[in-house]
Length: 307
Image (cartoon, rainbow, N blue to C red):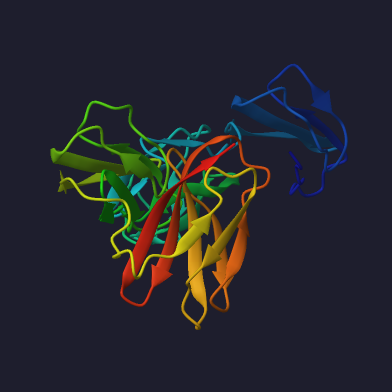
């Protein structure tokens, strides 16, 4: 603390700082050990006499900003309760909540609503009678959109190809197929049913904070894998194959060809220009796959065995 002598006609001075320390300087500076109440006394004298002046100095602890909150994220809209944990005999609070409602507050323990997805900072400035302090936490609040579960599916005999239409992207997924099989976490799974019948399929989507579910009934009826007549069927040889498959009877225009793994879904895609072409299964493990050939009047699905 810097002291200033305002005495007049003083020749000799003695400062008593109330903590066992003293000084004879005119305008001394003194460091106190800690917060507290100190009786400061200044004694002055000259040849004509002496005088004494005393006053109490209140030293406050430094203001230190700190806070806590009940939630650091959620699906919009959601509320966050902030709690002031600052120390130092705080007398004022200045909160800043970018992206929040309200965007600022002078209350010690405000409640803020977040309505728009985003990553938001929070700042608190606190003050007492002698100093102030600020604490800013970057990216503290994570506000996510509420997920919406949705899907469609295409049947080919006992095989169902599911297309995930959920939003937004970046979710986790759990499919249950209604036949007692293990759930799937794939985005767009392919599932083979053991028997004909009605099956209730559910898709649960989750982000970090919340989730949504969609359900649909799938009916499996006896049908051939290829839906085209023999005259229209595309030739696919050899089957089984060690790698290359030769396709014939394709339309003249570009034809999309897709390969499906029974566990992983769509794994390879090709486009063939002209009535014949090849697709390569090199590098795939031996097993059963489905080859989809997209045609003007639908699609041909063929079970392919990789040796």
